[in-house]
Amino acid sequence: MRIAGGLLAVTTLTAATACSSSDQPAHAKTPSAAVASRRPTETLKPLLQQALPHVKGKTFTSAVVDFPPNAHAMPHRHGRAFVYAYVLEGTVRSRLEGKPVTTYHQGENWVEQPGAHHLLTENTSRTKRARLLVVFVSTTGDKLKVDDPRS
Image 1 (tube, rainbow, N blue to C red):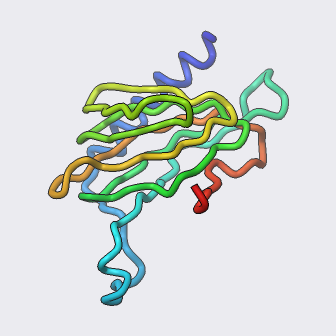
Image 2 (image 1 turned 45 degrees about the horizontal axis):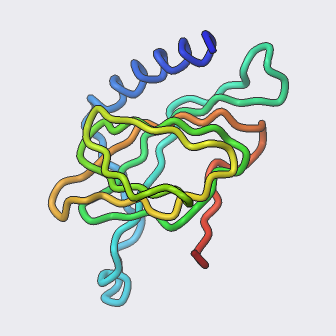
């Protein structure tokens, strides 16, 4: 627990430094008319990935997840990862399977247990972006996010 707390503190400082820069996520393509009518999706920018010392087979990963205005994430899972999310900016609405819809504002946070099914994640604003600091403790080599479009 002390290791996780220390790593979280380091990650928060790393994210705060990263968030103070002015670089915005680049979009590779200009959307066509058909795609432009769809809601935008989130982007994930990894900050730090490191094997956990003395915890064989586990990796610590931190990332900033950016939700442009009106953006949402497809239903997904994070495999066997334990996930911690902290709202850096904006407001995000979230729902895990078996739980009620919850709205999180800047400075609030939540955790997702391994195997959790994340049914809803969206930026509640149509004009302002939302950003999350997300920390994963996962099995080394596992994908951090697996979309579930059938949900």
